[in-house]
Length: 369
Image (tube, rainbow, N blue to C red):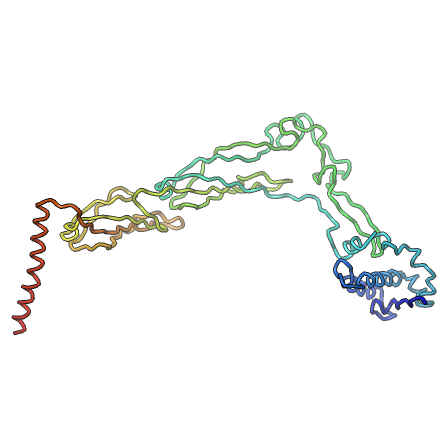
């Protein structure tokens, strides 16, 4: 006994007086739900075939009218004669799904593309980074062919309009389906979307319109840059495609360390070793700075670990005016070797240090009594 076919209206879950738009919306919803590419459950493929068959009939006014009057028997094989096997003009599940639900059926003509960026590195001395400098960098990049000026054609000849796409760069093909007419737009295979062909390619660049060159370019390094800083120079990178702009040039700065100074942001730090006598009596010494030797006054009694700051003697601020500070870290050193005279003086100093507390104690005792 043959299995009774389901009612087409029930399959699409629409009323018998549903409009063509109602039927189309219902089919889209159910096809999205049961399409085998989206639903791997058992029975989904069979369900999808039933839904497609129902839509095939109800979307055709003539066959819908016949179905409304006589049911499945009234169609008398009409559906099969329309080529349901393989889904007619679609040729399979993938085609119907792509065309109906917006898969990538179009390839547009190539649009302008920005060129790639180039990165180069240059070395700077500590002073060049602090005060700024002008440096020369070597750039290996692609430029327009010096012989054909990027036209790709041998000088004396010219590009011609592509006969396949007539200069449009696209080829349009019309496809018909149960859902209507679709236009498939693809890039022209002959001109690759450019719209023209080169009958006689340039011998110098072999028809590419480009050549590799090495350029020397001066770069202004601002004062205050640090190790790892980057300078961006717009429009000095690789050529763009299809009329797109050049990329950018990025210059990475590698700053050498200084023999004396340690940089922390825009401040500089230096260590200063002084003797015990200088710490006790005070002194005036010279310390190296970015601006040359600077006189520095040490007050009597300065202790090891103290920091003396010289304002505005550091590195220039990269953004905004002014400079950082210069910090001198005092370190009192202990002599490891003493001559006889030095030992004699230090012993005398030790004797004085021992006597002073006793004298002070006696004065305090007398005062209290």
